[in-house]
Image (cartoon, rainbow over all chains, first blue to last red):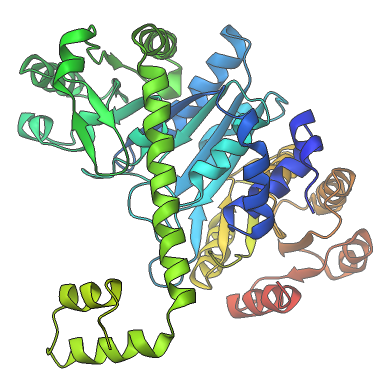
Length: 332
Length: 133
C-alpha cells in the first residue's frame, strides 16, 4: 500500500511506486488519486509536442535545467513514447537526452508508454501528472509521443502547449493545415543551426498573419470549440515563434520567458481557471460515461446483449435501433 | 484497467562506447511486450540508480564491455538497495571473465549473459522471475 503522506513529503521511492499504481490504473492508484485531488491544481502544466526527431526531449531537458537554475523552481517531467501495437512492448528513450538533469533532487523524470492510446498521451498520463502536482512540483513538463498532424490531446491537459518544429519538415502548405499547429501557445523552431530554419519560421509566421487570433476552448479531446464572445472580450494571445538550438542551449531563456508570460496572460484573462474547469468538466463527463456503461452492464444479463448482437449480425436490426431498444427496454 | 507491464531499465555504466548489445537486448525485450527504459551511453552508477528509482523498474540490465564490472556492478546494486528497491533484479551482459562470475553473483547479480546468449533466454529468465506479476 502506498504511503500518501510520504509522497507529499517528498519521498521519491513512494512517489515512484504510486506512479506505477496510477499508470496501471489499479484500485489503489485510483483511491490515491481521489485523496490527492484536493492537493493538486497548483503546478504549471506545460505540454511539449511535435513530430518525431524535432528535438522535443533535448528541449525539455534544457527547459528543465533553465527553470531549475534561473527560476529556482522544481520540475517533474512526464515523457510519453509509443507502445508497439503488436506486442504492447515499448522502448522509452527520452531519458537519453536528459542526462544533464541527473543528480538534481529538484527534478523527477518519469517515462510512460502510450499503451494503445492514439492522441499522443497515455490514458493514465493525466493521473500521473496529478500525482506529481500533488507531490509539490512547480512545473510539470509533459512530452508527448512524436506527433504527426492531429495528436492534440495535450492541449486539453496542459495550460501552455509548445509545438516543436524543425527545418525541412514541409512547406508553407503544411503550415496552414489544421491540427497540431492550431494548439500551439508557443511555436519553437528547434535545430535552427540547420539550413532552412529561417524559411520554417517565416512560413509559421505567415500562417499566424493569416488570422490566428482565435481563442481555443479546450473542452475535451477532439471537441475544441472557438468561442466568439471570448475573442471579443479578452486580448488575444499571439503565439510567439522562437528559434532554438537545444543542444547548445540557444534560445532557451526566451522560451522560458514566454512560458511565464503565457501563464500571466492566462491568469490575467481568467483563461487559466477556464482551462482547468474545461478539463475537469470533460473528465467528469468521461467518468460518467464509463460509470453508466458499467452500471448498465451490471444490470443487464450478457445474453440479452448477445441476442441483440446476433440480430445486428443478421442485419435484422441496425446498430442504432439495437441500442434504442436496449435503452428503452423494448428489446424483448 | 490496463495490465501490469514488466518495466526494465537497460543501462550502460562506465566509459565503453559500444551499445549494440544493449540495443539488441532492449529490442528483444520490447518485442516480448516489456516496457524498456533506455538511458544511453556513459552512465554513472548514481545516474542508473536514480533512473531505476524514478521509473520504478522491476529489472535492471547492465551492459559492460570495459572490464570495470567488478567496480561498477556492486556499486549500482548498493545504491539501488540503499534507495529501498530490494526486490529489483539485476542482470549483466557483456564480457565477464569466468572467475568474476561468483564475485558478481555474490554481490547480488541474478544472471550474467556472455556473448552468444540467445535473447530468448534473457526474455524467459525475466518472465520466470516475474511470473507472479
